[in-house]
Image (cartoon, rainbow, N blue to C red; front, side):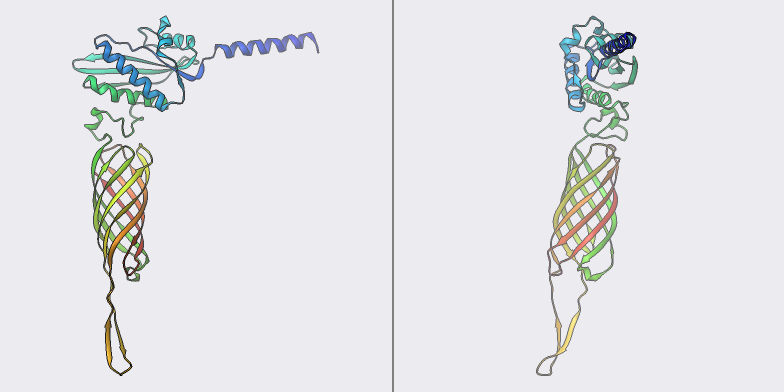
Length: 324
């Protein structure tokens, strides 16, 4: 091996290690002390703690301790790319989140930016306005979601972190009461007078939480039914699949046929066989809710129902509808 090749190899690995040593850890994020002036320091301290906690829930990145960040001189009174990058390199964090809180009358304006330390560029930047200090908890949840997903405030909305200012428009918070109207078709699999399909419709009222919805359905599908139902909501975003079930009562309409025959004595007999057409009903449901973070939703539902009566009525049920 020549001396030139050996020297080139040593130089290459030395240079590579130097470059890597200058790169901040992309799996770490640092939150700078908030820049503020007129707010109560204790409120700001609590708000900062909420933000750090929410980021830890939503992001897979390690959060640099507040004490370590505060020990870096460039982290104080910082809201800019240069000081954010300096602090990020000092604590070996690949991303730095900086916030500035200011007031306009009673309103609190929170301006934030997420900085890529290695590139010296802004990943996402946005501002949020809250009407009072208590709403800063919801604001911090949204900023944490933005930092974790690299999305703007508008894009990061999910059920559970909607702010009061958005609720005044079309957005909503978790824990809502919804009213719905749904229409579709019933496709018999057994019983139901052997019909091919029939129209179905129902009204419902429900209580929707962050992960669950439960309520009451009242309507008709070849007869009258009333069900209590519960659903597990698989996401908190605008496209939300779900699974669930229902239990209730169903009175199914059937065609009755008389049986005519001659008995052993030669007498003409009309036998009207009576069967029970009502009974308890169990339904398995799955479907999709669209625009879940809004005050209105479109719902597509597919169910399979079992009615415990003498006809053993079973059917597939497909409906579409709205929740308001």
